[in-house]
Every structure is written in structure tokens, then in C-alpha cells.
Length: 441
Image: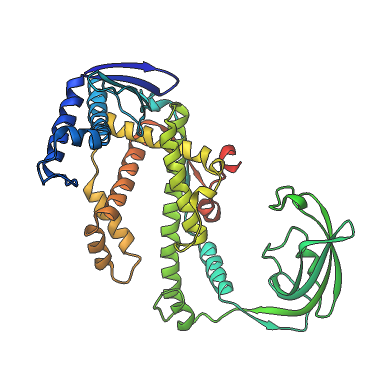
């Protein structure tokens, strides 16, 4: 077998493979003979069909089947011989497949990039540190109460936090527009449900009041024909309802799966959850910042096949997140451009993390895996059942092992970098990191 490889553009390779005629023709001849022994044709006894008849009738199909297998086998042998690492399947084009002549084809495919990691010791990493303070705990309890709040009709001027029942009709340049009308809509002032300025204009209104509200649609508004437009809404307030917070009692605690009888015990459990969330948020931001520096230091090209695969995975995730598992949506309907930049970044970081693992011969720390599983299980009522479930499910356990390996890579990188720690508030710590310009776009 003869093999030649040409680098075309970037990571693309074009490999020409020439296979001796004997390798194809002998396999075809053997299969024709095997078929002659088993095939049933009218006018011939079983096993007595002449080879020439079988070859004429079934030969072309048999040859294509053999060629497919030869391509698969020889492609694998060729990339092994040339020490290539294909990223995705090849695009195969036959050059010569005539009987009695050398069989040849070209395979075009992408390869994984060769990575030489840069020294990470020159990198500075900003690490945030925070703690759950009493004021943060009180605010969280207040938030939980508001989530379970009821609304009771009240004879009062509307204020932030009150719920209004409103009718409204919107106009742009004196003309009503689609989606600008509602009847009996419940609106909580301060919820930022409506466009900026709408809710604040209704503060102080009472039941029966009619108000004219003038607002401007944001430039980034989702409806193209409304972006940046000035609008007037005629609003009628039907009812004002005041927020009534639930009491901090056993019934309230049970709604959050916390079986406590006292406020102090409830707050202890809430603080534990907040601290767990804080630890995860700080770790996630530190990991994101560190891996972003790793990418900045090691700009690499990535195969488009890997990016396309990541885009498909992100499409599926988007459908599951927003449409649920039963959503009848074709993932391909979601534009590729929505995910392309982030998919490329994910693939790049994934390749770099794998290179760090390989270069440092890292092995997953099974003790850390066990600790991570136990931490996950601690949030459930029957932790041991959850632990047993993880260790009985190789796919789920593999996900935990991958997370632990990422953490080991993170530790390794941070050990060689300069880490600057900054104190931040709990609120800022758990707030999602601002997206990069390409992700935001």
C-alpha cells in the first residue's frame, strides 16, 4: 500500500492511498464464490448457480461492499503509518476502482493541532474571595419570603413591590402596534417585567386611575420594528394589591425542604446552602479566568469538525434548557452563528486542558472523586443512596471524574501562576461573570 500526504490549508490534510489490485479483487472473487454457494435463482438448483452468473448479477454490488471495507481498513492503517490524528471522518473520493487495476482514493480530513504549551509562570490571575455575612443571610431570608408572598387588594397608592392589575394599549406615532395591548394583566412594580420607565410611571397610582405612560423601547429590544421607538401607553389601573409576606414557621420552612422548627435552625440551613453556592461560584469564576489565560497564552487553530460537534451539543442543551425534554424542536433550526464563537472557545480550552493533562501525566485523584460525590450527595435526604447511585452509574461517575480532573489541572496552573486575591461581596461573588464581547454578540 502506497500513501502520500499533502497539507492543504490549516489543519486540513489530503491523503492519497493506493491499494494493490489483488487486495480488492481477491476479496471480491471469494465473496462471489461464497454467494454462488448460497444464492437461490430460478432455473438453478441451490448451490449450483454458475459463478459467472452470480458475478454478472451481484458482482458490482459485492465490489462496492468490498471497496467500502478496504477504504475503512486502509484509511486506519494509513493514518497509523503516517502518525496522523484525524479529527472527524474523512471525505473520500475514488481515483481508480477498475477491476484488475490498482485501487486508489483520496481522503480529505482535518487533524488535531500540535500543541506546545507556553510557560504559565508569567501569568497573573485575579481570584475573588467572599464570605456569607449576617446581612447577606437576612437578605436571603427576605428574598425567600417574597418568593412565597401573597397579594391582597388594598386601598392605597401603588409602591414598589405592589401588584397591579392593569389594562393598557400602546401607540407608536399615533398607531396601535402588535403586542402593545393587554387586559387584566398582573404587574409587580419593581419586577422589571416591562420596558424601562413603564413600571416607575405607575408608582403612586390607585385603583381606577388612568395614566398616560411615555417610554422608549431599548435599542436591543427583541422585536426589530420596535427597537429605539418612542411609544405612548394608555393605562388603566384596575386594582392595587399589597404584598403580604408569610410567617417564618414550620409550614414556610417545609416549602424549601428544610425540616426545622425554629427560625435560628432554619437560618443555619440557609447559610449552609449559601456557603455551598458561594464556594461553587468562586471556584467557577476562578476556573473560567484561569482557562481564559491558558487560551490567551496558547492561541491554537481547531478542526471545524470539532466545532460543529460542539455546536450540535450546545443546540441540544439550549432546547433542553428552554423547551424541556419533550420540546418538539429540530436543533438544526437554531442558527449556527448563535453558538459558533463560544463553541470554538470551548473546543480550544478542551484541547489545551487535555494537553496539560498529557504533558504532566495527570491521573484522576479517586479520593477527590469520592469527596466530590459525597458533597453532591449531602444535599439530598438519603446521601448514601445517591453515593451508591453514582458508583453504580459509570456515565455519571465519569462526569464527576472529568470535573475532578479539571480541578487538578486548575490547581496545577495556579501553582505556577501569580494569584492576586481580592475581597468581594457575596452578591458580587455569586453574580454570573460578564460575557466576553464575542459571547455577548
